Amino acid sequence: MKTILLLLLGFISWQSASGVDFLESGTSLASPDSRWKVSTEKEDSGDFTSRIFIAAQGANGRTLLAENGRHFGAEWSPDSKTLLVYDNLGSGQSDTIVFRQTEKGWKQIYRTPGGFHIIWRLDKWLPDAVRLRSHSGGSSADKDVPSTVLVPFDASKSRQAPAPANKQVAPATKRPSSKSKRSDAH
Image (cartoon, rainbow, N blue to C red; front, side, top):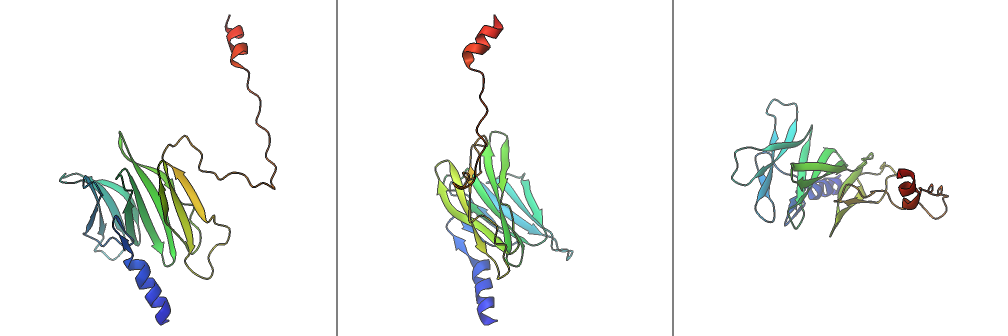
């Protein structure tokens, strides 16, 4: 029991230079470029509702990113253009929501596929993507959850891993060549 408690305390108190696993209510986490901050609020009414917000440093307004019944963590990309929000749903279970700064504000671009007793966290920042890794949050963790997920920042690119070599994939259908399209137009 003591070992489980120590592991849980270690999970809750994890912190890096640009992220924390548990963002305490009323505190904020500044982006590496100091232009943005994320903060959380917890309801005092006892319903455990927690909200995570993003705001420009020094601004009065803020934007609600997510809401849950437990708590949140957050981690900034080194360039401050991507934010990982750790949606800590319950004991041994946590999804990661990926937000990206766009011309129209902060936009959710991905949410991990979940899984019972699965904890999703940053694996590696890449130039045009982020790789997330799943970890077992208990002995009864789902076994069919992928170990990693690649999230490209360009939404037009696929997040799917290549098909396994032993699986047959249907061939792509042939498209008419640009020559035939031109001849139809005349």
